[in-house]
Length: 467
Image 1: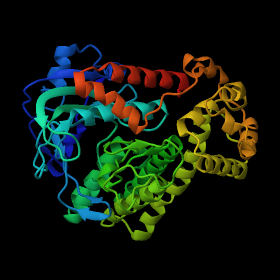
Image 2 (image 1 turned 120 degrees about the vertical axis):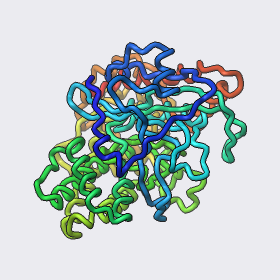
Image 3 (image 1 turned 90 degrees about the horizontal axis):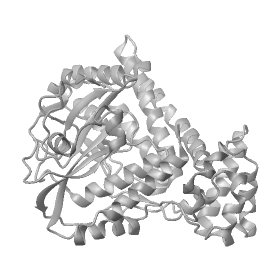
Image 4 (image 1 turned 180 degrees about the horizontal axis):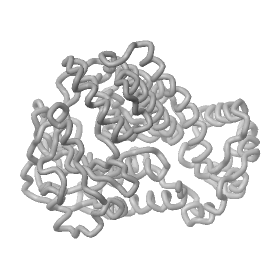
């Protein structure tokens, strides 16, 4: 792993050097050993984990001080110029053995110039929830940031939406980029056109080199096209996985199409287009069925921010990859989660998906159980017959779905031999399960339920074997 902090080249206009909070305690509660090994930090013992990710001692050859990023954004449709990293920062950057740039960013690391009235902290429960959600998404093959370290910090926090006082923590997440759509929006709002061009150059160089062009206008369009494709791909995966992000503000989208900034997320228990994750989203703006539309709207705001660099008509063309990428991703990932190959006939695939999801919605079948039961298609007929939902599969209205599943070729059916698929039920992450994981931590500092759930999620990831 090669240390490399190229964001220093642009820190003067999209980020501010900050100091982390001085926490009274630093207890390592979670450490992602697999990803730590992948980025060259696998040899850190608990003491050094706490030093680097609780006290934020700089990593060798990396950023000397963390950087709080500046950005604006549309929050529930309303533009807010008073944003920025209010309780997080970019701690370190590095490149992997494929020369990809990786970020280590934080949540709950203290106040910054953008904290406004916030305390800059994260509840321990919020950190636990992100560990669960991000690991589960990764297990389901969804593009996502990775939970890297969770350090309990010994402070008691007051919160309005959960019992207070509550325990505090600082989370570090790993992703390819923390550059948000809102970073472009801020520069456009402030009419900093030269800096806007610099940011485009930075993003193209480090994340979308295929978009490079000598003409900055064309490069901005090419970049928008690449981001549109990445975003569509991500949201197609969300919809197949039954994931509801909850807060699809433009400051919660990044340029590499990775799920991040987990807040009031949920996973669907059953198919329901109107399912809304956030209790405060009273209009259902970010409800499950509206996520594809909202992703396109967020990209339109990014395109608007690029108007100082390119013509509106050209930028409109840069948005076109989104819908196709979304549709292709949704079709491909639904089939992937069912362990079967799409047919060569796109119309037939569309009809199958319509029948499949309509049946799920009509019957109220369990989303995670159904995908689990039929993984491998015709190879899982006997597994499905032993399922808790077997009665649903015997009904006449399931016939078109069954026929579609049996008509498709299984992908690597030997995966069904994994112990994960020998059980009667899959790992799932419904809200009551999350609460059941948290309750013993809150009541008696018992972390065994979290450890079991994370282990079960890891078993699923290995069983699916997306490589």
